[in-house]
Image 1 (cartoon, rainbow, N blue to C red):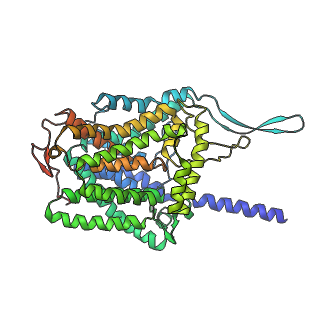
Image 2: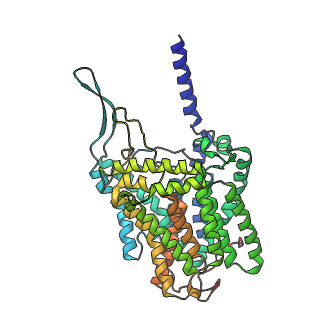
Image 3: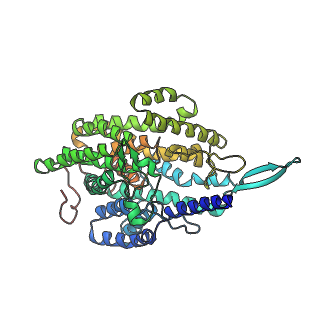
Length: 508
């Protein structure tokens, strides 16, 4: 009887745990309504702002975890729905052209490679992964679990997912790559950060409960929101670290706008920058705070050449880290020792990441070129039960294990190439001919790439930054690529004819 009560208690606990992660009806209703919201944005706002707020507001407000699992297409969630709607409405409603391939040959090659690198992955992963248990004196094999192999029909879904990921990148390359478009991008980050700081401060004071109150579930492990005797905010983000990186991006954007602004507006932007730095400190994320402390003075005081050099250095570290990690050339023990000197808690977290990376690298080494594909085949599991024993954190190890070297180099190459091309163009020109908004966006991108070594923080806003930087570098390299005349900057003043200004009242 006791055993029965115990088993019933465990079953009840499991059921309660399951339903605590179940989104309520409002969560799915919000996903269903977002196409309508997107339509309103594209009808009432200028194109640049409609693209930005369709994707950015979706990331800020839509529920995490909740998704529509439709057959033969990727899951429809807070990342895919806004990206699809922005792309479809731009082409279908406004009849705007969106080039599908960049002009630069290497960028074009990497874009194609990103979209089609999944083909060899699917072709080389048709066999299922089987977990077997041996029992009895004469061993009898029992299949305890199985991960399905990839089939040709899976190829369509995976390729569609790759194309959806690229949609913000393609939109930003065309419509957010002019100096005015880049200013709109930074302004959107600034306003979004200021707006999101309000619920963030509420959660810092009262504990992270907003997602639970609105959408009926908590999206992650609550223990990970407890830091330094207080709380880290999460609101509607997948994790507190995502929110901290979001606030960091908003802070850097506000500082960049303050530096380029005229005297009257500059005071307000400086005050907003100080406020966002304070919020960033309260987010209690060591990495995001370190980026902020390093890059805020750089954007505020350093010339564009120094800013792009730092961005290029970080991008180079991000793309070469997996290679060095595979060769055992990353001094993880020394890094952990330095982290221990700063914080024992942070050192423990970092050590846990390194341990999981090592397990995942061993798994990835079995299929190094094209990876293991989806269905969690890239994860390390118990040989008999199939239970997952590895918890990947960094985005790079997920991509490397899933798509192998081919997919990894395609994605990281596409992320880092715009920074390199912008650096080359800045080197060839005087500072007065460079947009004051380009290098801060490159720094936001580079910091995100560094953070991707430890966390899976690649989101659609990152692809907006990638497209904006690549498009701007291409505008400099190929004059008249998108417009008949190219805009040159003298500080914050435009020296060449500009495209028509955005309709509506200025937000600054």
